[in-house]
Image (cartoon, rainbow, N blue to C red; front, side):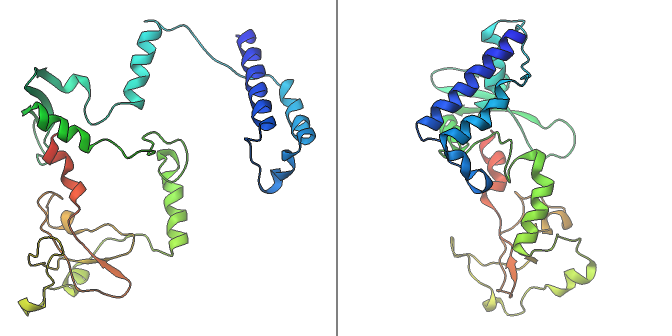
Length: 243
């Protein structure tokens, strides 16, 4: 292990030196001085003498087993192999979970034509450049709680609070049906259910015992500093696709 540690240390530092010489490293702020070759070499000198911690052990099932294990985390999209029941040139049968069922067995079996299965599968393919696994940033799970507090501070948004009965009575449906705003997509009549502050989560689905799939389309008149709720199409993706 000591030999591997020293080898990794040498290869890593040599790689940094090559990138610096090629001008592919950029430094900012207090580190701007490292752009000079002499300063960068001086900065790396202590690292060449430090003990680097490298851990490795032989895999039980060989390299193929390791790649198969890791690939399920980094490349799996929409559905895993264990949910596939059967398939041929025309159809695919797979198990899916019905999230509308709150109790009992929620697993069901669905059979789709090959073309329809591929169409639903492609709905879950992420946009180019979007990373599923994030170790830092706003979307990293380990930093999410602290980042949300910081985001709310920057946006000057208060944390969402539980609505009381008094709050519910403040929002009512207009007496004049003609005052309702039409849906900008389908032209249907919109019914006001609630309004909520920017950055807050709509509470109507939880308050009325509805799931996002069953919640009616809602939209209300504009209120300064507030947004109106509208059914999110992505909320029913799992139910519609089964993936």
